[in-house]
Structures are given as structure tokens and as C-alpha cells.
Image 1 (cartoon, rainbow, N blue to C red):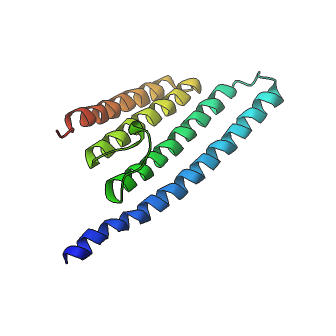
Image 2: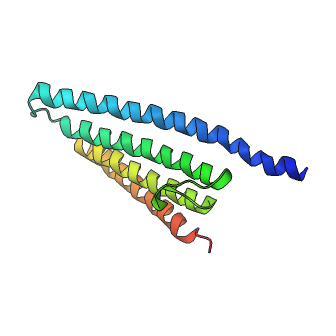
Image 3: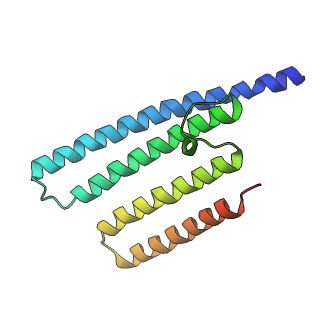
Length: 150
């Protein structure tokens, strides 16, 4: 039984491979968004008001892709073996991984809020979205701060 449990840690490779596929798809998605944004800039000669939103969406898609890649590497590091990667890219325990996830969610929510801000149509809805974003961000930051284990 001990051997089975020890070897079962390699089941995490399923998650690692799945996350790597998802990261590849997300980077491709970001590349397509980049091409669309560049075409918009060229076609409108930089005059289209939507350029800013398009470029922010490009950044957002690459943030998500990078987060997925970090999760794949961290899962591998946690369950399979050591990797020779920059320290910031790896989580060394589940609390670190949760903290990285929380930080990425806050960042993505901030970018999405910025998109809403630039599309300003309904001030009341924007205020409600801003308050909700701030509350969720505060909870995630507090979780990351107070959830640390020494």
C-alpha cells in the first residue's frame, strides 16, 4: 500500500500535461488577439477608440496564459520533482500555489475592471462592479496574507 501511495503522486502529471496544453492554447489565443489588435491599429491609423481596450485584452490574455504555465510548473515541482526555473515562477507548497492563484485572480479582475472603465456606459453598474472587484480583491489579498503557514 505504501508503494502505491508513493507512486500515486505521479498522477499529478495528468494535471501538468493538461495545464501545459491549456497554456499553449492561451498563448495562441493571446497571439491571435495581438494580431487583431495590430490590424485594428493599422486599419484605423491609430484613431479607433477601441484600440486601448484591445491592447488591454491582449495583456490580459497573456497574463492568464502565464498563470496557467506557472501552475503547471508548480504542480510538477510540488508532486514530481525539482525544476530549474526562476524562484518567482514556482510554488513550494499548496499555500504558495493558492497565493499565486489569488494574486492572478486579483490582477485579471483589475484588468477586466479597467476594460469596463474604458467602455463606460452605465455609471451605476460601473460603481457596483468596482465595489465588487474591490471586495473580492481585498478578500483574496487577506487570504494570501493571513493564510500563510510558517
